[in-house]
Length: 233
Ligand code: ADE
Image (cartoon, rainbow, N blue to C red; front, side, top):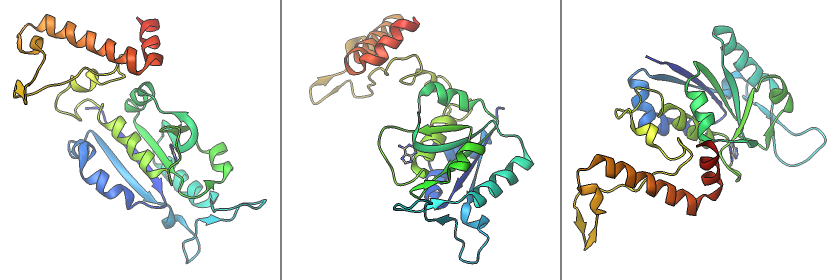
């Protein structure tokens, strides 16, 4: 059984409680497909007020996460096991794509570092961080929600995490195409009919129809993705 360990470092670990205790992630943890450990950076503070941030050198607004708690926490973890990557969630990182998610899902140990201030000391990024990831071109108030997004995207495709093994492979983006439309009972709802082909029982026709729908949708909604699909065919 594949097994992924994810260590999340955060100054606001409470944010993860509900996400990790419900959702597909908690099911994967219960099935021992993965384990997730959240570390409170305040636990690594050295002063009795548990400070882990300070004002920026050179002036400016906001507080900066200091080196020491992050170095101490990551070095402790690295002394226990080898990590494939130390990922920093940041809006100036590389924008997350399904291909990157697929790569992370076959890792053994990952560290996710969440910033929650104006920024983090650049030396952390220079020395410890191996990948910087953004979940899109907009700014959130911290790296915790992006970390949840990343963990969910990774964990759900680990074999054994979801009961329907084929389901993850049929996702939008897995073949550079958006997903096909879905329908369920009843076949007619408020005079709106389900496409006849889906009721035909002819699996070859259904497969072809779904493929056509995926292509049509991708072409109109995401011409950039459609071009990628054509190039990779
Ligand atoms: N932290 C704040 N905004 C972010 C974003 N868009 N992606 C990743 N981390 C972030």
